[in-house]
Length: 504
Image (tube, rainbow, N blue to C red; front, side):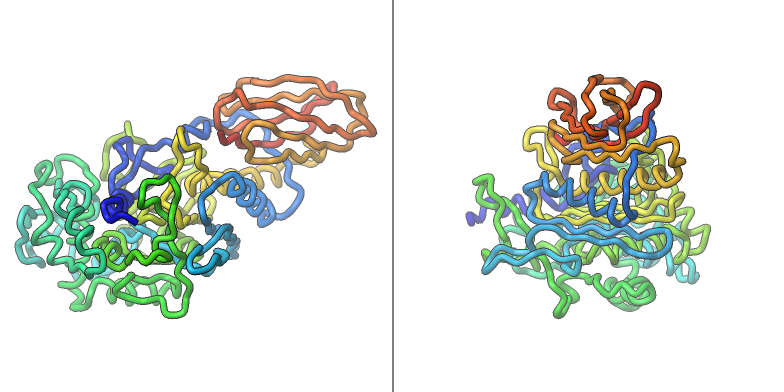
């Protein structure tokens, strides 16, 4: 490993995902909202629901297994908290390659990156509910002065990124250099605030800009008001009451015997990701630098339980939760609503609230209030989807689970006599060639049409039926990546519909 390439450690300190900004990807910051659009499902779907013979858990497993099979990423873990309180969870891949290869399990911890901001925000908001402070208090009421930090900023402006404060990670090259030179150092919040925050980008409350510096200040506010370290307060106020026994502020807290998945990154520029902990690169410095802006490690199961409890209205007073879920970004062109340490995009027509994050590990965790359902996905690999690399990443795994959940819900609400042919399409997701197996046909031939997410027919073919069985292949290799509906018709009606995802 060549030390100069360790700078790419820093480039990954970002909040990325399918809920994201139209800004370029930068450390610890929402990235372009590309993945929903690239999957072709940012518009209402105009097709009948698919059939799936099996349980919802089997449908989610099928979606997860199908999509991760297309990915070179080292490992994925995922969890879905159902409306009935049960949790489906699944893992795929490896947790480490050095000194030996071990499988990844749903018990393995990974970094959650900027999802940590939601945990810190909830802790501070619970203090608001307890009357210990007000969202409209000026931070100078509690904090000593710091260079380039305007003490007139309110707690609300800090949590909603409307301060204009320079981002110590994204916008100060000296911070990058200091990390590379001190990879095994444990950073303190006061050191970061006193020496690595440059001049503000705009006056207070005149614009919105994602800045990790705001959540360093949030951590210090918690400490000043509670008299405890910020992470002790988070544990007391959030982790312990919610029973989140797999979540730790690393390296300030250690996970004990709980397994911590290694992370994979290309540090020497050879286009091959390496097992960073396996080759001896320390991670304590990186995580301590993220501190109250992004240092927590966890599992998807803890993330979905946290998401449902908080955004389902079980932790904060109703007025405080409403403030947390207010759009303070106020820029409709981005599609992002950012509240107080929380964000949302309306995805597939349903509202969601949560956060995403990346600290080499990449994570998504969102709650869907109309469904009373939460989904979380983590990966232990720095690689993200790009049109050049064509890598299936955690964002697409997340999206495939949403699609599987909604499809199953729609299918179970469909009358059996409306869609009665049993049809299996594989591989699904796939990269162009899809096999159709369908039974129960009395005709000598049937028609297969493929409709894209906009409702346009892109394929229409006739296929023979032999012994009531259809065995056909359709070719979507010339189509764009996205969601398509394969409809199988007899002479009169559509009798089977299956949704497929094309990933190229």
